[in-house]
Length: 328
Image (tube, rainbow, N blue to C red; front, side, top):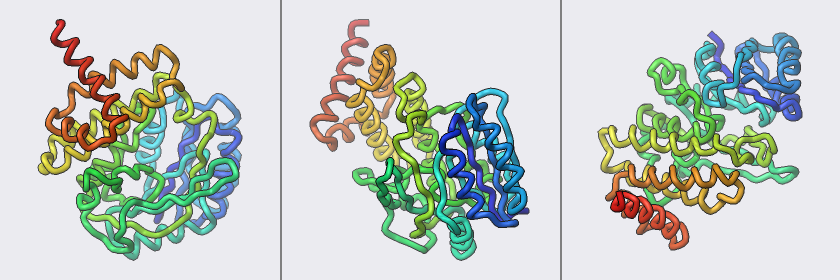
């Protein structure tokens, strides 16, 4: 069994894949397993990965898997999880990179703490600019109950820091059925995943490691493209609400889930100009339907706690739903 499996999905990232692969080489260890998943790229990414898999096999265990059709990031990560054999697992996206020696430090943290998973800080890279982004949890280098890091509802917490690649996870979470993503989600795939992780894992810790460089502003990134795939955030947050409502602490946790959902809807409505016109109309109608599905008591509390601009946008949608229903 490898000590660590690193799952790296790639899709049309020929410009960035060499940096990603070079950083893996600078972190390589015979006890590490690199799983390279090509999600049916249409550029030169597969050729780059084929060469890299052969070269990396000199310094680490390597598996290269190519999808016969594009399935999205969540599905590609699941492919990697199904193939992974490591005691610990982590993720990296195909356009990001790692600092030299970071993976060894990550493994040491997991060994030292003995918890189900650890979360790490990261560096955001936008063109030549660099900024440090930290897990919004004050307690460091000690294991505690992940549920304690979900609340309070009015503040950014660990479930809002939803980056799957910012941490490492014990294999027992795979065996428990906690670590897989919702197949087919094209965006916000980390959101149901991070909530499930915090509800169902038994222990976690936050460690002050800076080793992941997250590349922002990539033109091919789905977050930069205003097509219908962006609307998968609604399916993702519907799942968060549904699963949290079934939790033994639903009354305590639902206000946080609803408030976050409302904030994300308001964010997309404020930026709807970047969507194609037909998608913008679909965004408004799907958001209105989502508001109708939410627990209404929690929704009212969320709207009262939000700033006037965002709350007004959501109240207009809510009135639209009510008016439509009355007319019917």
